[in-house]
Image (cartoon, rainbow, N blue to C red):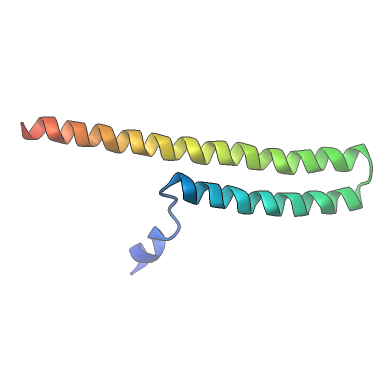
Length: 85
């Protein structure tokens, strides 16, 4: 039962990753707007930039991990195919 629930929290496709990145970006922009209200001027702009920059870094890492997992799965399938020959 816990495995079934755990599978819900695994990002399997690029589409799922893009949906999560979009949600993170919305939250990041909302937090950035709050920073702009709390810290007007250059400090607020830097904090806004930091929140959105974190989403770019996290999104790139998610997309890289999905690509890497696909490559590993393909290599495992090739090795399994050679072992059965």
